[in-house]
Length: 196
View 1 (cartoon, rainbow, N blue to C red):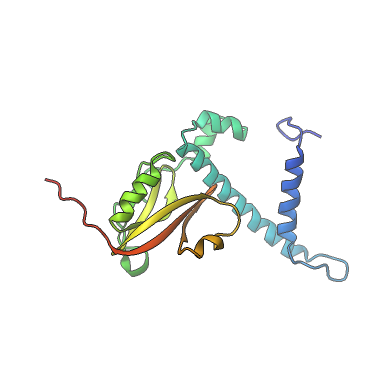
View 2: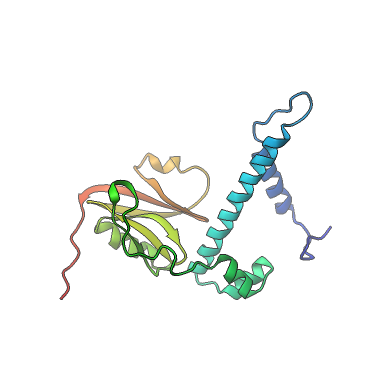
């Protein structure tokens, strides 16, 4: 049976559906032959929110890699305009250069615009100056100033990040399909060059 777009479901669609269903049901045990229906509704709603978040992150990642709104719209089964309206990020949202948010009223700012091709170089430079990534948006990273230098690493988000923790990495940002890991070097942050 075809889906709403006339596409035939594939085996991977079935596997994804099975995986999501198993994750939602998880450890819910049938009591007296019936599932806890309200718990299933609650977990399904949580799964829907997570999937929406993952979709937003995937679209932002594709934009950062240079894909146009027209291509993304075609992939999502909607127009270019609809894709941009739904997933585009208003440029004036959270655009203050610094904020008083975060622990200890830390200084924060946006680093960007950056793309998938140059963001790691920009994060390396920022890290030497004491900035670490704490958030990601379309073509930019939210960074927080600290007194020490930071290393940044981008890896594909596959499973638990615990395997990186042995080497001192922690998750700075989850931006599907990427994990941005950060590690404090313990070295004092370099001073920015003085420009006249």
